[in-house]
Length: 208
Image (cartoon, rainbow, N blue to C red):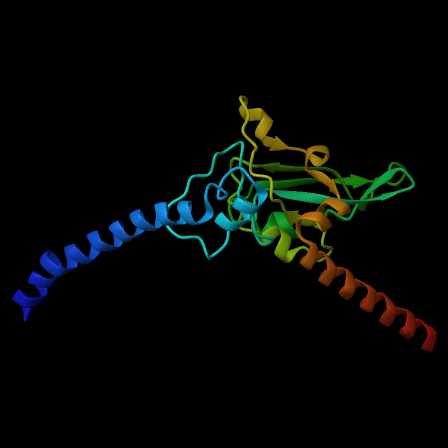
């Protein structure tokens, strides 16, 4: 039995592996001929290469071409703010949950204080993320109770200085419209839930 298994692994098994590689080799050229150059340098070609229907091997001419990332793709987090009367109001309340659940501990928050009383207020004076340490796990976004921090799609973050990779509140901040543009399904679901919660609170107040 052992000899038969060895013969299969070093005989038919090798041929099967070579056959698979040869099939991919042929499919590469057949797919190119089938689409006659339209697989490249066009939005339709990029969309096709990002689909499950693609066959064979293909090249992405990066950075001239970029394969669209799926909505659930996640990279370095960003903070959401809402633009009201020309003022950027961050959703973050500096509760610190994101910093507590962060596995590599790359988040630290400076909580703002009332200038008159010195008491802490629900607003971050500053917010830092070391993107060299961040593992892009998404725990911060998952556990945030205020939908204040979300995972980004921007992966082109190279820099020449190590200090440039410690992002502060200003560099992390992006408008809610940006979040809606990169994650439309998630945004719509969250907004629907938010509206329903507000309507329920209004009903409870009216009956109080």
